[in-house]
Length: 294
Image (cartoon, rainbow, N blue to C red):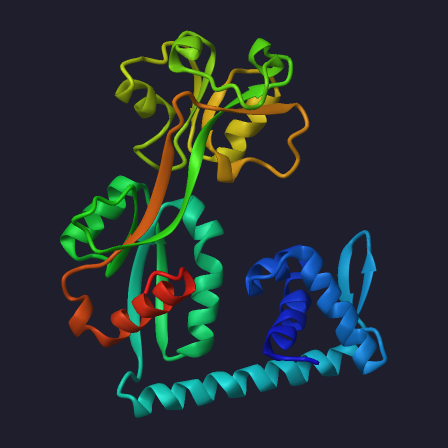
């Protein structure tokens, strides 16, 4: 049986040219998406896509099917828009600030599903450091902001959490220890270090300072987590990174837990006007439901 997720999936595959990226957009695993496409093709009795080394291409049969799916989904968005108008929501614009890793990993599916349900409300995602996001929130430049480790006194929805890990090349002496054996700051304080920030004030150096240590041999400072992982793989040093940003291909890399372990949480923070701003409150409830924090 085919449902809206299936139709959204085939449109996403046609747009992305790859099942993996399409699966992320609709909130499925790659294997689940592949199985869903195979089932649709079996039900329809013809191939929707052809697969090659260059990616995924839409077949001659698939072209009009994807076109009808686009029309159907657009019509559904229009119906949702009418429903919003009936409820007095109408249109609106929400400015949301966040640091890069959340914009690329946690927000896309939330924003896509919200737009499908409330097409009249536009959500504009602005990328900045966590310090910039805090400044924007304080000045009212943004309506919502994603911050690291929100304090209990703030109205926040936790979007995710992960542990900080020590990343080493496989040639490093630390890489020979058991994966469950943690690494403390005393062992790495004087090691050649790749200082990766991810656009956040909470990073390897700040964590070391909080623990009473200073990382003294910084080889290079980078903002991008992927760049840090690449430099570690090349043997330029070790790094402290969030577990969630580790690459899928870890050849040449070894990730070990910090001892004691340190987690980071990233939460969506709301202003005091949340209750009186209907579009804002609608988006907040959407995120709460998606993250099961109602």
